[in-house]
Image (cartoon, rainbow, N blue to C red; front, side, top):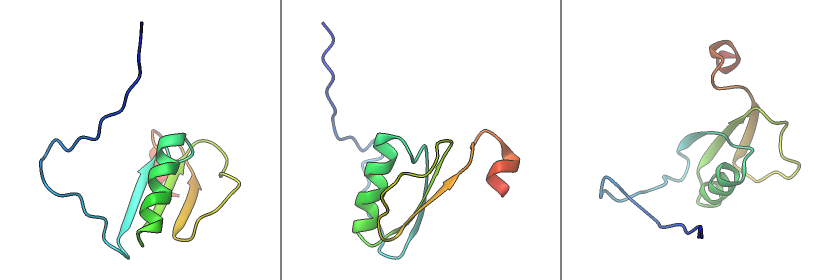
Length: 79
């Protein structure tokens, strides 16, 4: 039987701090995890750019920007 569980981890042991006003880019942003993380960071005051191959999610969050791009295509990322 497979049981999924999630554990918070910090392999470096250093504190993770999201700087208000800091700029963060998340690849895979239209998926569930990327979008959820981006929303939380935006709520913490960060400016977040989500990159994903899918069309933009319907709802928007202040501080959250979505750009449709395939990160495996250098030309798409440069645009």
